[in-house]
Structure formats: structure tokens, C-alpha cells
Length: 344
Image 1 (cartoon, one colour):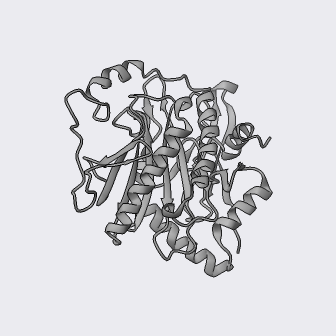
Image 2 (image 1 turned 90 degrees about the vertical axis):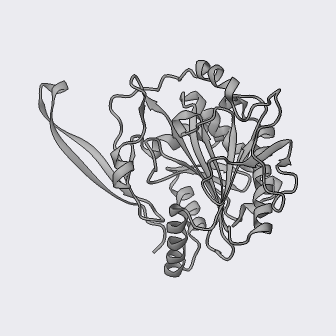
Image 3 (image 1 turned 60 degrees about the vertical axis):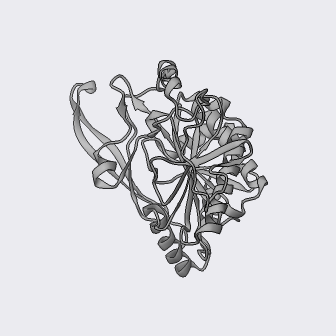
């Protein structure tokens, strides 16, 4: 059975105070991820217009003097890699420094400092900054692969600003290499094998074909990278997926691949800025050796806080039920994003 878009529509019955307490049905749709089967609940938020743009100017100035990634007159206070791993103590690539993470998420956990500037808005995340940072992370992960073959689960990650869990304003990427598979990757690897055994065709190629044919969630193409909105989103705003259909690992990604990825990111950043989203999470996943069905892909999740309380876009559904609540239909996001990719 090829890619299946499975969903079920439910309703909650209420007496609506806006219609003289006449009976009304509130719709919600349950969808299941086309690869892992993970459940998402989709119900459009009825009381939210376009979000006001947050003002981080005070926070930016407050954090500048204590920023661990800003240049300091008192000398370098950054941690260093042990000499048996990286002899120089830190890795410099494309003018970008890669240093160990003081709060590691894996055995090999690093920080790629993207700029000497303390804060960059979305529109200031240039090709030089982003592609340079990706190349620096790639070089770090290549060093890990040559040094320790056991650390085979690799990714490049980004928490941009506080709503996305960013504890430092200064722009930075986080490359990881671990001995153990993250939960998402473990589930995906198993599901990809099941899909191939069942269909004798690769999932990612089938998904791109199916989404392009349907036209509801396929945003566009930049070079060899396919961009789509996830059918069963992993957040209040649906996550945006970029698939490299010919690449299994970030270790052998050519410059052209990073350039194509940046073109799509630049379009996405423009869309986010116009919608007053200023924060996002991004993860770029890479396959361990021998996983032939895996393809490099990225997930970008817009993050925000509900005014006026500054409520997080995360609740018990995600935190304790391990499901996802999505309050905008993926198809709506796709329609809004297509003009930024020139695919109207």
C-alpha cells in the first residue's frame, strides 16, 4: 500500500452563546502521520488573528554584556575540544567557530557561532551566515565520524529565540552526534523499512510524488530540495519539511545542496516574518551508515507565544499525551507559502 493520508473528522456539540445558544457543532480532525502513524489533532483556533510581532529589543540589550558567544576584551572564555579530537581546541570553518557545548545533548554536542553580531533578525540570516554555519557543522561531524565511528546518529539543530527554547540570543547552530538514536529517528528508521518491505518502493520518493500530485501541501522545489507542509503537523503551526531525495547523510552533502536548502529557508524566513513569527526550531536529520531507505530531511517548526499572557504554544496534549495539537490546517499554510516559492 503506497502513502496513505488517513484522517477522521469529529465534532463537539455545544450551545453557542454567539447564536442565542442555538446548538452548534465544533469540528476537529484527527490525522495520522503518513510514515510513523503518530497522531495529530487539528482544530483551527477560533480566537486568534495574526499574531503581534514580539519586541525583543530590551532583552537583546540586556543579554549582550553577558553573552557567551560575543567577542570579549578579556580573552576567550569558551570551552575547548580535547587535543586528541581537535588539536586546535576549536574548529574554525568558513570564518565560523565551532566549540563544545557546555550543556551537551549527546556525547558529541557542539555550538557553531554563526556571527560576531549578537542578534540577527530573520531577514538578516544571509546565505553567508546560514550556509557558512551548515558547512562548519558538516566539517565538525566529519571530524566526529573520523574520530569515533560509534557516534553514528547525527543531526544539525537550531533553536532560534526564546519561544523555541533558545537560551542564548546570539545566533548559533547545534550539531550533534550520539551513540543512541533519538526517538523520532528510531521510529522513522523502523517505519521506512516496513514501508519498503510492503511497497518495494522508497517512502520519501513516494511521498514527494503523492504530495506534488495532490497539490495541497507541496510548496515547491529549490534545486534538488522538495518543500512541503507536514500532513499531520507536530506543532500549533504545521511543521515545514525539506527533503533531499538523493542524499542519505549530511557528511557527503555538496555545496550545491546547502545552497538549495538556503534558498528554501530564505523563502520560509520571508513568510515567517510577514506572518509576525520571529522564532522557530529546526532539525536536519542524517542517516547512520547502512540505512539505505533514509534520506536527509529537515523539519522547521514555527514557534510563538499567545498574547497577552505569553502562553507557550505547547500544552498537556504534547507534554503528557505524546500527541500533537495543530491549530492551523497544513493546506492553508501551504497556500500562503507558495507565493514565496514562486509556485502559485
